[in-house]
Image 1 (tube, chains in turn purple, brown):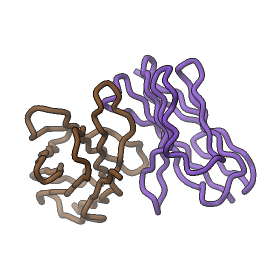
Image 2 (cartoon, one colour):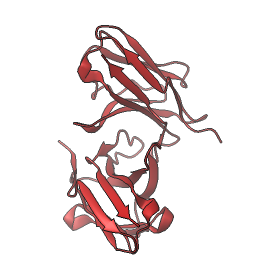
Image 3 (cartoon, chains in turn purple, cyan):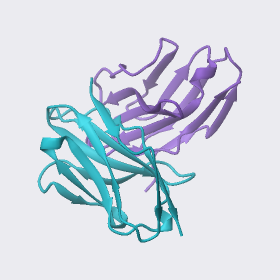
Image 4 (tube, chains in turn green, orange):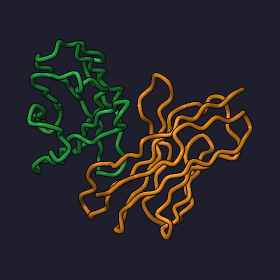
Length: 112
Length: 116
């Protein structure tokens, strides 16, 4: 079946611009996670959605970062006023029951 | 704060050599343990996982890992590596709070290079 998909695969943006990254989880998966992967920081947790519960936003690095999940399915991660340190690969994962997380291919964000 | 430590940043082996990658975590409660692999140009894939039961778990491609609770460790092993095992390996932990399992805590990763 289809896996987790993310778009765009690559995004180059100028410092100060806003960007939106999209994640389509596996159908039926109630849990959705955002992580980012960068050379200096490894894999960092950003935010987690589980069903209709309030999201766990404890990993968001600043108030420039936000995410929403509409209809319990698609999620959008928004970064406002991008900075060069935001350059990273943003990974989305989904899980059916909170156990195994299935990862998407990621969006490579480059802030110039 | 919870943390996951991977002791080796880069491991270089010849084909047929044995592999052991170390992973330690710092959390005293019930945990679930994972090893993920990222092949060049590909996304993260689950290699194996431990939730409960037999502490020796077997995964795909001949990999196995042993959970030693007293040492807070979950080392990854393979008796004989192949060139195709060249990849980055990540140990990860999530905290078992019953119905809510939540985020993964990742180690910094170990780059494995296997020479033919």
